[in-house]
Image (cartoon, rainbow, N blue to C red; front, side, top):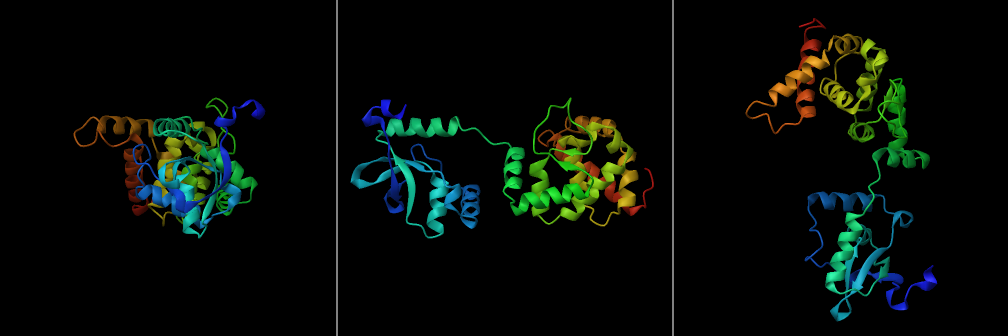
Length: 270
C-alpha cells in the first residue's frame, strides 16, 4: 500500500521545468539519427494524453538528472512546452544508473499487432487504412497473435510490414498482391503462403514490379516452387559474399527478379 512506503522513498510528483533537466552521459544513451526520428515523430502528434511522467533525480546546482523520458521531453520542448510532468527521486549517481538500466531492461515491448489493435480501436488513420488495404485484398489484418497451428489462410500477421508499405504509398499494390495470393491455389489452400517469411518477399516483389497485372500475378504465384527456391537461397548463403545476407533479403531479391522477368515475358514459365 502507498501509505506503507517510507517517506524518504516516495518520489515528488510535480511539473518539472525542462530547463532544469540535464543528461548524465555516464549511463544515458546518446541521441543518434534514429533517436531524433523518434523524437520528431512524437512531436508531430504530440499530446499530453500519451505522455507518461518522466523520472529525474536532484543533482548539484538545483538541476535534475533525467533518468527516463529523454525522447518525450525533447519532443515536448520542440512543440514549445517548458515543463513536463515527472517524478523526482533522491538517488545518487550509481542508483540513477541502476534505475535507468532497470527501467529500460525490464521494459515490456508491445507487439505491433497489439499496437495496431489499439490504434484501430482509437480510429487512427494509419490503422484504418491498413485494415482497408488488406480487407480489399480479401484478407484480414489480425489484431490477435495465434500459434502456427491455429492460423488460417488469408490471415495477415505482418502488421509492421503492411504499415510500412502503406505509409510509403504502396497500398494499392499491397491490395493487388494479397488479392492474387488469395485467388491462387497456393494461397487459398496452404497456410504456409501467409507466413511472414513468405508473404513479405511476395509483397516486396510486387511493389518492385508496379505494372504487373492481377491476371499475371495469380499464375506467377502458383508457378513458384518456394521449397526449391528456399533451398537455392540456403546454398547461396554458403558462398563467399552472401553469408551476411539474410534469408529473407535474398528470397526477396530472387522473387523480384523472377516476377520482373515473368511480367516482361508475358507469364511464360522459365
